[in-house]
Amino acid sequence: MSKKILITGGAGFIGSHVVRLFVNKYPEYEIYNLDKLTYAGNLKNITDIEKAPNYHFIRTDIVDATALHTLFSIHQFDSVIHLAAESHVDRSITNPLEFVMTNVVGTVNLLNAAKECWKGNMDGKLFYHVSTDEVYGSLHDGSYFLENTPYDPQSPYSASKASSDHFVRAYYNTYKLPVVLSNCSNNYGPNQFPEKLIPLFINNIRNYKPLPVYGKGDNVRDWLYVTDHALAIDDVFHKGKTGETYNIGGFNEWTNLELIKVVCKAMDKKLGRPEGESENLIVYVTDRAGHDLRYAIDANKIMKELGWEPSLQFEEGIERTIEWYMNNQQWMDEVTSGDYAGYYAEMYGNK
Ligand code: NAD
Ligand code: DAU
Image 1: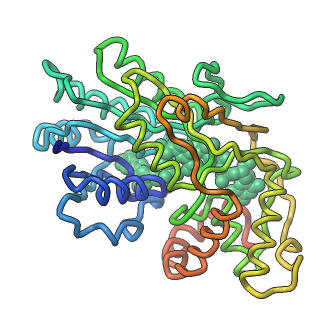
Image 2: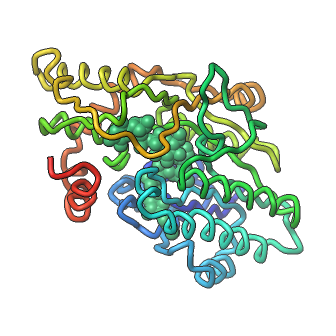
């Protein structure tokens, strides 16, 4: 069956892997990648599929409601997979309003455009909202986030994502817009912007720069390889029940310090440096304001109901990730030129 799918944020980290998967796996679908190309959006992430006959790129800001209405009326999209967002917690602490604009207003604009376009006939239509486990807040015991865990966002980023999730459910409830949601844990892998922990540390180790660990490094995250997230999105899109939410995670918890030591060890090996050399680069810096202690996803629902499961062991995922960044130094050099230097100096000082 032919479908016109609008994927937002497809030039970003996760979006680029989702766009690639859909373009290659479903040649019968027309894939429209809509992206504003902020500092985090990079068309070089998807050069391998840019000439595919079923791939189209549209540069638009989701904050621009008029542009979205025009695009929906021209293209008559059947479905939306919405990933576009401001995604970095530290930036949300510096500039919360930008997160409100893109993550909340942008999402409501997309919901409105879909509602208007699909009014009268919602058959076969789907608005899929991609969200985060951070909406559930911070765990301080051994429990896990379930789909019905009450929302308790702690950062401006997670508050904006929680708000967008509420709007998506409100449109399902109020206007019967067919929606589905997923909330995923921390992703890692190729093409992640090096403001996030793993690519930042890989790049710093390579360049003998300090590794800034926030607080004591005892915060816990649940890591999932990005292509496993893309496969989960494929399953939710095709098999998920309208109105439902699916948690996605790797059952793969690490304290930041444990994780950093794994990366350091693997990098020493990769670069032929004496064991322990990279670990010596660790410096403990002021903690992130309001730093969530632990995220941990219970992914049993998606595993049981949709048959998804993480395919990659963490050790292999980290190996592949390091390999990719080592082999793609030009990508790293390009994204760390320009504005990146200013961001880095403001966050970490000129170290
Ligand atoms: P990213 O920051 O790497 O990419 C975001 C993309 O959105 C970029 O291409 C950017 O140009 C685009 N964008 C930003 N503002 C826009 C706007 N106003 N209009 C149009 N495009 C805009 O983010 P990511 O890490 O790939 O995350 C993608 C989605 O997945 C987000 O919704 C995020 O909340 C969610 N998520 C991320 C993770 C993670 O670990 N990275 C985990 C769970 C959920
Ligand atoms: O849980 C899903 C979320 O994971 C996504 O919704 C977000 O978009 C994504 O950015 C990620 O959020 P985190 O804040 O967990 O990721 P980040 O890579 O920024 O940080 C991971 C952990 O490492 C966190 O506890 C903070 C710590 N950290 C991070 C940086 C950048 C450091 O100790 N030092 C650093 O320099």
